[in-house]
Image 1: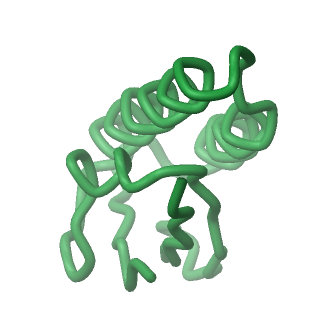
Image 2: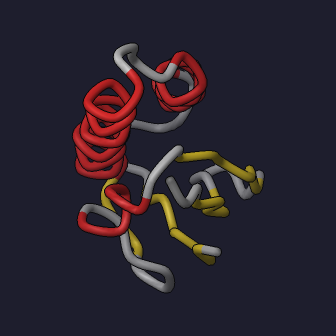
Image 3: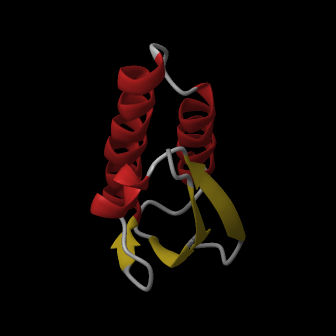
Length: 92
């Protein structure tokens, strides 16, 4: 299953490299796009759950790395200004 690394810029200017175990995340986030914080978190949540589900279908267990990544995104998002925006810088 091809993994995807995606880089984001948080509203406070910090950049983070993120991980998805499958290309499913590409249906929810696009490189070069900027999203309101809440929308970004929801898109990431949906995409990472979908990616984890694809791993479960193939291997019989959820992807803990995808769920850990989601937890980091949700935690960092809770520390950002609610009206901020997140930019998806790249996807590889």
